[in-house]
Length: 306
Image (cartoon, rainbow, N blue to C red; front, side):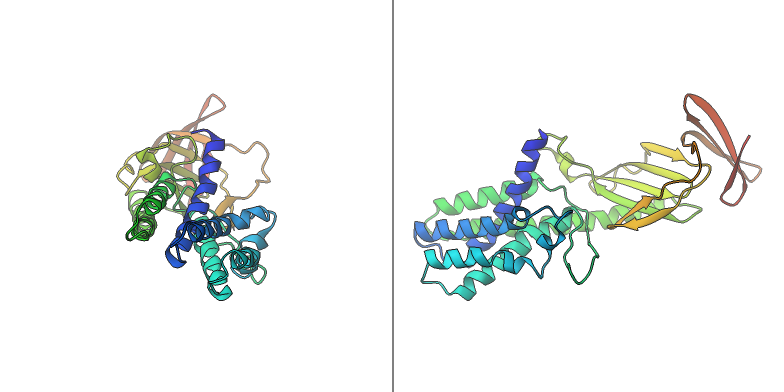
């Protein structure tokens, strides 16, 4: 899928989720009410990104600021549909932006939810934004509801229910994989496990690959990683395995453990070819810069080239 098409579906997911929230909570009897309802939800769903990027303008994604971002949308909706109370329109607008945008962003990347009172940016990291398992059922639900005369809310409600169950499944799957990685790859030194969706925009529009995860185990001397599958069924094989003889330091930045720059010149990184223990001594053979190196552990977490 083209990167620009992926970005379109990213925005579409926010718009459809916001519109679906409004559709279930506001009147939809006439075509005027339907248009107003969908327009209000759509604008609220995408509104934070209209005011600025979350990296440069964290206030746009704060639960304390977003109610005021959608205040103008609620005021305009009140002028169009005078029969509804302003409190109802503003309340629905707030729910549409919180669920349609902030919740969805939280599933994919870090969000400055508590700005300006806190710089902490939580992130669940269970979803690739633009995932067809989000926007496709919402699209079908809204289209069916527009065509139905009786129970026009039901298809959208079922689509929202599917999305909520899907997100819960993604959270559960990540926890299951994390536990399996701990069992499959025990470490002798402190390690940091990262579980991420194994997708971006490189996969076809409709593919089961959107459901898969990849894993990474980082420690001072090791980096292991590979594909985890949907529930950890692919954990038996490491796809990349690197060894750092000099060791590394990490720092937690925006929910991710990031390697700190090394002060050592020409820091060596080996692509591991073989690892074994002989007479109680741990050995690793690897390749770097087209050369083969062998190291042995002379003391705990201290390695020497042989």
